[in-house]
Length: 301
Length: 234
Ligand SMILES: Cc1cc2nc3c(=O)[nH]c(=O)nc-3n(C[C@H](O)[C@H](O)[C@H](O)COP(=O)(O)OP(=O)(O)OC[C@H]3O[C@@H](n4cnc5c(N)ncnc54)[C@H](O)[C@@H]3O)c2cc1C
Ligand SMILES: Cc1cc2nc3c(=O)[nH]c(=O)nc-3n(C[C@H](O)[C@H](O)[C@H](O)COP(=O)(O)O)c2cc1C
Ligand code: FES
Image 1 (cartoon, each protein chain N blue to C red):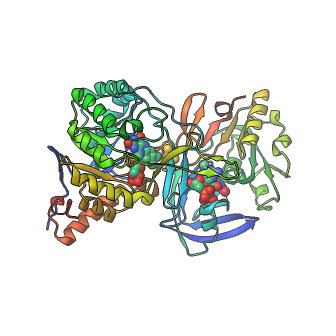
Image 2 (cartoon, each protein chain N blue to C red; image 1 turned 135 degrees about the vertical axis):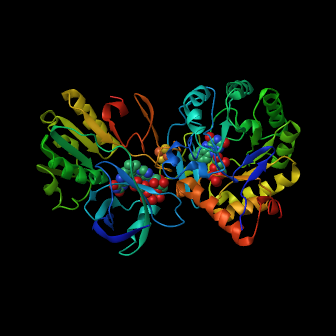
Image 3 (cartoon, rainbow over the protein chains, first blue to last red; image 1 turned 180 degrees about the vertical axis):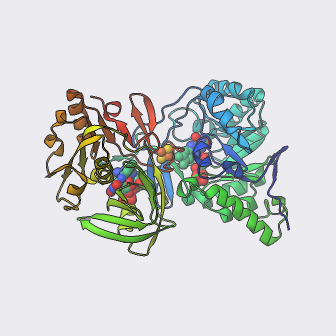
């Protein structure tokens, strides 16, 4: 029997539903030395800002029971350098390329979108959910009004399909998702990391210079799953689910909860070959269960 | 999966891990060791201590949770091993000093061993500083022209810097900074191997970023070895 891993995300086809999550996969180049990254359904770029960003100083990582806290602070080469240097390399992989866009102000978001308009990207993921920068970004994603406003402004000029990435720290993530849909979003992705912290009791100080950081990994999976479930029931645009996916079974859980695509983040650090293994695991599962298309299991829970 | 051949305690909280197999790597490079399937999630960066025809060895300190779990493993147990990663020490000529503090001694073993074999190298002097005890006493003399050590003091004070063409240093920041300063004063280049927390180990996540005079660099990929002057404000 031949099963079909292809997924339609609105009009765009993905060869399978497994996508590398922003910030955990660079621009794909390093992982392409581990396995052929075009095995994946798509790759999401590191979060891009208008100008190059140095990122946060101090410790950037702290391990927690079954999770990690990160405080990278959106270190990236800036959108122009991305378009000039990274995107042409990414486009050589035969897979969908998504640019993750973060900003401190509405103006910054809009300028980045303009810079990306004439490129051959497949999709933009509007990051209104990063907890690791002092200004903007996640601040846009907490309330439904500010989220809807930024989406509306971006949608007005954006020539690529626009997915909006939400924060689990939203006051009401279901309402934020619905307001993004109403503002014209083509899809929703969730969740970004949870705002979290750690204390160094010897130094009697917060571990991170920014005090707060972002929690990801298996520790957040049950909550992420619940949020994906609720949001995908509440909107009619497609949903990208993520948060703590460690293996193909977790991916199936998110799909059954309603996700069209899933993203894998922290697991890339735990096992650099995870992407390849999850695609293969999903395929074996579908063959064994006689599932011909992902559509048969999406949202059945 | 890699199978442990031995995991021997060689000092207070210090272990020598040996794994059978054919492994690649040059002096100053490191491997990522994952000690369990699940918890903890991330791998630990550990320098190559020695590579022989059929084994690789790591010298490590049991400090936090991951290395504690590792220290309880024994012959026949499996761990995950990925590498070699990083740039390693550059190729050099002339008279070389290797200066290590604490576990910073670890990468200097294979380094000394390799340097001694090179015709372009005339001297490899090894200086090690430990807080409490000298570990692997009888090993260090074999990989150096002369071996000096210090317990509980500042090993950097022992180094006659101007005698050397190049210095390689690994250990606490204060020590590497001191060596860099002394090198600068004497016109001797000092290469330092620095530490940073790591998640991916391959250059994708930007967890390990360090600030250098030439902008941000990734310790896991562009390093861990840098010119001391590029790292430290002197
Ligand atoms: C390139 C490189 C080479 C190294 N070589 C050696 C070696 O040969 N022998 C040796 O004993 N140690 C070495 N270290 C340090 C070693 O990686 C840490 O001691 C180890 O990661 C601590 O893990 P843990 O589980 O004991 O500590 P935990 O505190 O439980 O670790 C929590 C997290 O912080 C990270 N972390 C904690 N301390 C350090 C540190 N000093 N450097 C980097 N990450 C840290 C851990 O990797 C983990 O992700 C090296 C570090 C680097 C960067
Ligand atoms: C080190 C690191 C960097 C990240 N950087 C970004 C980023 O730049 N933009 C973004 O939208 N999300 C970023 N994220 C969040 C992930 O894309 C993902 O939403 C989150 O980690 C949850 O998934 P996971 O549990 O599978 O990692 C980052 C996560 C980590 C761990
Ligand atoms: S550890 Fe990920 S970039 Fe260095």
